[in-house]
Length: 327
Image (cartoon, rainbow, N blue to C red; front, side, top):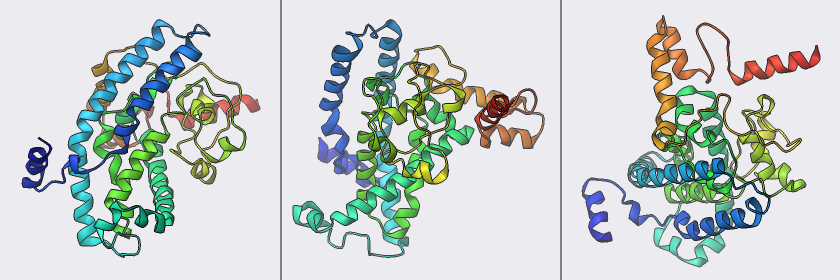
């Protein structure tokens, strides 16, 4: 069966997703055990396992299943495009794999540990900008808002992946393919980044000292998922917090919050509403906009921009909050 599926993709000029060993699949049993551990060792003893957190978790699993199915086909397109760029337009062979058969030996990985470290850094840098722009451009926000729409934080929420986001999340790595990083290494590191991001989605782990300053952690990610105005649009890093420190988007956790979600929570657990409602609202705003400039602004400016009425962009709300504090 695997050979037939691979042959189908190859016959259509695409890289078969089955020829890519996705590290996420090996971690699925661990994800399940960690979710159950959080439920039985943390949520139930503290009476936090409420109807709301259960419904958020179930809808998150629904989004996760849909994302896995969509991602299967998207991998074929993405990796095929990556290989086309790599084979025809790469600028250097310094970061590549000279003999791909060597890639499947432990000796190659031991000798090229530095290359994996470099791929980790550049891939996380690309993820930072993908994540940040997914908050700052409304078109991209329609694909990412799904992940933030849960009003509780738990490990199950890590599975709450946006479906539209799958269509554009890989474009941020094209510059690294052009430089000469091998597509398989970039794709594998992207998946390892997602695996790392699973465990910060919890209230069960407190602050971790210096670790919080350097790496993504539960403390940092609680800030990221908080719906308090002062916390919004902070801590975008996937593995490292260094990018947030460099570009001014880091915020350390103050008092632990229980207010999660988005500025205006959607109050639904229906998977298709979670996926499509923001996109529907954007289309409605574009149709109602009086000028072409306003129409494009609803697509490409930050969520909350309006051609009339109160400006609810996060940057505006945070500036107004700071002004009130000074007064």
